[in-house]
Image (cartoon, rainbow, N blue to C red; front, top):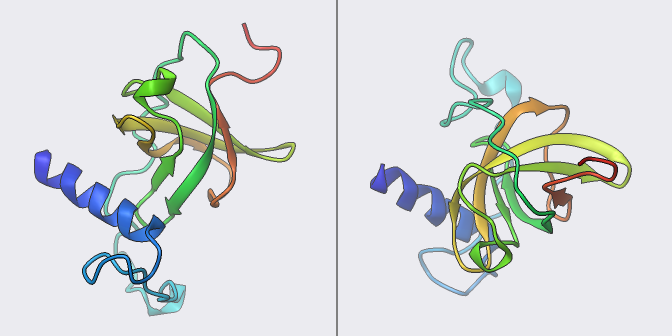
Length: 139
């Protein structure tokens, strides 16, 4: 579990760090593999997507997506323990007025959280998408 967590955060930081920040964690401009190049029946991701939709948060917490990897189903958001985020909290992701899906917090740090795709996904998450624990009109 600890090794998987370390690997997850290593990938997340490699995505958001600027080039030249580290020789090891340098961002590369690799294109995603072509769908036709993937062998039939091969898994499309390393983590199981849609495991659950988490638990609702007590307070409304809003933030933004800092990094997203659709192949792994991993999302990093800019809110963390200082904002009241806890593991298994569910966040709704939206872009403008469009609902994208739900993400579930796996790990929290002081100012950011690592999340995974939830069961309810209608599109891929992109950097800059908005996240919230409660939509307008929800109790």
